[in-house]
Image (cartoon, rainbow, N blue to C red; front, side, top):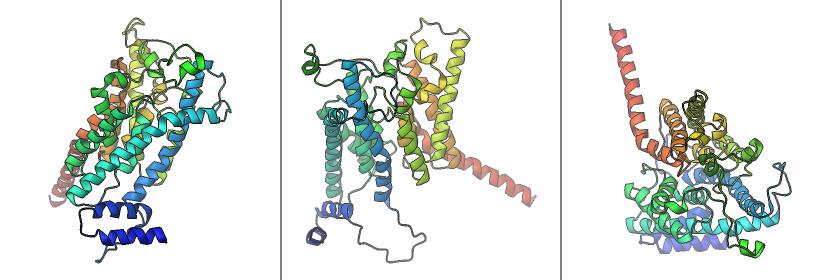
Length: 401
């Protein structure tokens, strides 16, 4: 009660001042807002933006924890050799050493992401005189999960500032942005620091101390090796469970699938977008498989590795599954109509695999595909609505005839 009373006193002290939004944000983050509606309401519900964001964060936490274990596992495996026959409950994976190594590298990314992003949010709230928006709660968690683990912290800080200011605040804040803020941050990193964002290397920490030979050991990721027409040494179960190298949150298809079910159950994520994105990816992957089978692409082609990959395996590697579940379903930047969601999701999946195959230098296309469809989402909804209007006008003419 003492903390609550102190925060309430601070709210009253700074009420009507420039700093009021900052203290209100701290108070409402810890406690329920004390404002109530003074007029009649059409809909009464217990959910609000903060609760919605917290549900998404709950769905992301398993991916974050798994990513810490996997980072440590990839580190030790690159030095000591991979363990054969790994299962999801293997003690070789879920051990304290793996967790500590991964946490030491990943937690600073989380701290910088939230720290810098929320500071920018507070500054804009004070300058513009509105309440601090909760939209960055999810973005702050997404960003560390989609960047390389060895990304310098200062680069991440610069990208976060760019993403929050240019990707969201200039459009009016949360709910007004046309691009997914987390993907805007990643796109900035991709174009500003491409050598750090190639996504084709495995990070290994303190290799000199462990081997006495080198400061670091690098190896290719799944997409990196396949893009170079190399054969993968990982089994299908390794890819499904997530015992493969990659960005922090994208490796475990199992946990992403469970997160998708949780978001669908809580009605936060659109199952139409998720399902249609999977269908689009499978269709594009199947088309490429047929091109290879017909002999139109030979083994010497630089596109052969990913083209010849079984079409369904595209769902298990890279960031496609993570993007389809947590990025494409962003309620602000995605299509709003039901038919539009089917079109929007299908094109994301279709274009993602197309970019993945035809861009061996950067073998991941889900980021660019989602950003592209973010731009076209309003257009898709416009034509869906206009199509419905025309159908109703035709029905009205038939009835009056």
